[in-house]
Amino acid sequence: MNFYGMSDKAILREVGRRVRQNRLAKNLTQKRLAEMAGVSRMTIVNLEKGQAATLLTFIQVLHSLGSLDGLENFLPDLGPSPLQVAKMKGKKRSRASGSNIQLWDSEENTW
Image 1 (cartoon, rainbow, N blue to C red):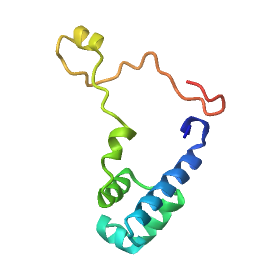
Image 2: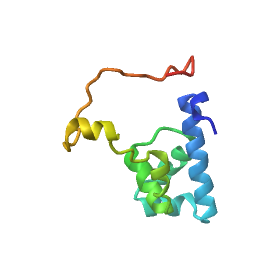
Image 3: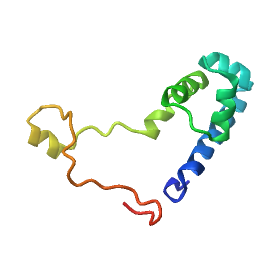
């Protein structure tokens, strides 16, 4: 699926659809998933509708569904590039320089 061609709201709806699909595959009611995640049933309803949820809520739901392994695919740990390691002589980077910033242009679908 090409998420870059989708609006933010469409991506939220797709995430909600996938949460619902996972919940149903595990034969869980919205109420039971809410209890397991420590959130209200309406929070699950809203998440499945693609309405914004906090990152904490999303993680709680993924944890309850046994789907935390999906986070590795979602946002893999890239680690430093070999060039950065050589440049920093073993120091760990803690700040961004702010130069060379590339932002996604949703109208042009380009960086």
